[in-house]
Length: 410
Ligand code: GLU
Image (cartoon, protein in one colour):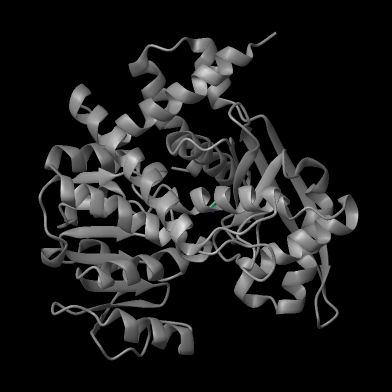
């Protein structure tokens, strides 16, 4: 199932359950704009390669389109469309004044040199520049893009349209970026899980976690859980996984990954095949890498009682119903990983107001946003007897549908 089918499935199901009209449902499902561009790159060795880039703008009913750019071979129009739709619901759920967008380039980022990546990024900005802007569409980091890439976007955009750092978020702190943005998604994952555990009277120190993915989101999430006393028993990246029932030393692992670029070779745990992580013995499973990893087959083997969707769309709908029947609780992506875009919003506000928030202001803002969103989702789920995902979608779709209706269709 592709990302657009997953997103549409949840929207379809929720609009039906909410009794919204077919007219509104179609308006919510159809993206506003899909742009596909060709980017030609002369590689360092003289070879000329052609890449395809995308920017999908799903909805701007509640504010400018907002969402990341990923550099990955699986990037295509369908994926960008599905992830753009998720951004619309995510920004609505945490109630920040944005819509949803997403994009990227179909490429193997690791095989490109820094110079090639810079040229590719700048050419992408030239190709999509006319549809992005501080009040139109604001890109941000996602898979295989980072603050450095955002700096190139800011700089290239400035050359064509004039200086305006609010055109992109997730920039380096030394170049109009915000304190706390780098760790925000992982921190949001932690804050949501913490709110969930507290509500159920479960102690953080008794929780055994498994985290799939040790990129920006997974490694920061691991840091916050470790600091709060949780036991991280398993961690994986694209090259493999480790398991340690006594708990992995996350500080040492982060240092190892910083130095060697992978978990491979870390001695503080037993090596196991990467695909064993999802079904390992743990209480809370955190998929923080790719979408679509929890299939129905995998779901059968899952031993965790709680799944925290740190990645976008890791649990397929076919698996979700099965898990719910089994009593496994899924904390949904549009809630769990909304911390990144929330601090992106704070970065944008700081850029527009030309001031800098303190770390305490960022933390306070992020914590209250995540707790409030969790509280609303949890309360509605209890009130209506629906899953946390269904509750999250009801809130998000309700807000967007209201904005669409108020704006009118004339
Ligand atoms: N790429 C992140 C996401 O999927 C962050 C988006 C943003 O900061 O705009 O939520």
